[in-house]
Length: 184
Ligand SMILES: CC(C)(COP(=O)(O)OP(=O)(O)OC[C@H]1O[C@@H](n2cnc3c(N)ncnc32)[C@H](O)[C@@H]1OP(=O)(O)O)[C@@H](O)C(=O)NCCC(=O)NCCS
Image (cartoon, rainbow, N blue to C red; front, top):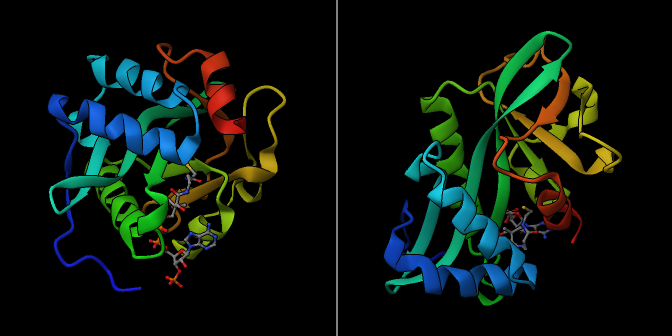
């Protein structure tokens, strides 16, 4: 299928809320993500550029949400960006929108000097973008979640050479809401 020539990616605005909720619900099938989204976007610590929207014909077709997190290994702590959601409307998939949103997220991580991006699920899609199994770096999920679905991308070559640890989320995200998001 052709890529969308008029695709624009920009930070989410307050006025996007209703349209964005529809995109997220169509991709994840419940309302939890959109309530999480408002928690995240209302949080003073979250930069606007971590919630990006893809528009074509002036309508949202996709969205990416990242949040700052950490990898904790004993007393060592490393900054990472956690990809919380990546959504493309079903009828617009396989036209490059997900890749463009992910590339914009990677640019953001690079600009802010994060060492890595962590993602969960959709392994085939993420592997094409260069992600590898987080287990290869001994990077693990907190609690009893399935580590085999966790993936990581080095932002600069070899930036993960000395890095390992357990993924740690910001305090304003409850463990319960995250569990529902990542496991459905
Ligand atoms: C995963 C998702 C964001 C991909 O979006 P997309 O716009 O279709 O992705 P792209 O068109 O940029 O695809 C890039 C490449 O990945 C491939 N790809 C996309 N989705 C894929 C999938 N589910 N399985 C395997 N390969 C996939 C495409 O064929 C393309 O390959 P190519 O470069 O060789 O042509 C979209 O399917 C989606 O919203 N899924 C539901 C939510 C989800 O699972 N999000 C990811 C976890 S947070």
